[in-house]
Length: 334
Picture 1 (spheres, rainbow, N blue to C red):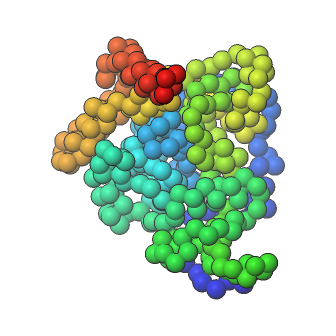
Picture 2 (picture 1 turned 135 degrees about the horizontal axis):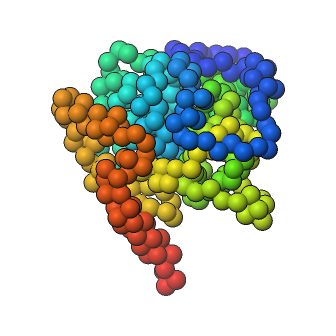
């Protein structure tokens, strides 16, 4: 294919599938018990300087418990996949975990407003930024999951986003049309939160997957956090429900309400009051520093964090709110 235009963004990860295969050939794919404490999983598999990806979509099914633990353990110098990133980016920005980011949607918390913390961190000069569209990042993960060095697409063409990406514009040898070639992306480690998983790492979730299936296949190491562990024979009863198979997974961590204060489809609604508290605290640096000290560093684990915000009673209320929402959505007379 003939390249006709080169973007100006920095490519943070090697897209060569043959280089990636050197790692994957040695990856342990045994069907073995992979259950461990979340703190142990982060300590073992999330390393300074490597490239991190977080699953979920916006504030839905996002592994916030893992994000807190990454900050609590003081990870630094990481790359970050900012794909539909909202509160997860807010948390990681507060901890200054990453110093380079591939970003499509970030800084905003959707209808809730903008994160002053995330915006200030990106504008601080401490972070290298390469821009993409949401689809371009999904296509990059898809290319990696397929074991090819790039994916041809029509996204970003004719835009400033293309100029600030690391894509290449080329002529299709079959149709003579212009395409954007987006390079494969192999994260060093990813964390994905699911509804159910067995001890081996077979995982299933409800709601939209967005790019999590591609992310699971593209990532060199994968941590699954799950609302609950279930028996393997339950997984075996209907294998078609398993979206992420055990052979991709390195650690399984049971973390009830692991997406809090975000929501979990069919399980619990997001805590909008607490997400507002985050945005309000960011308005003043001194207040926000004290807020982070209490909310993250003052908690030993996610259970402490939940107890700080009403514990079982508050979680039950959020669960009831989600159940009511689904009841209205699936009313038979609509």
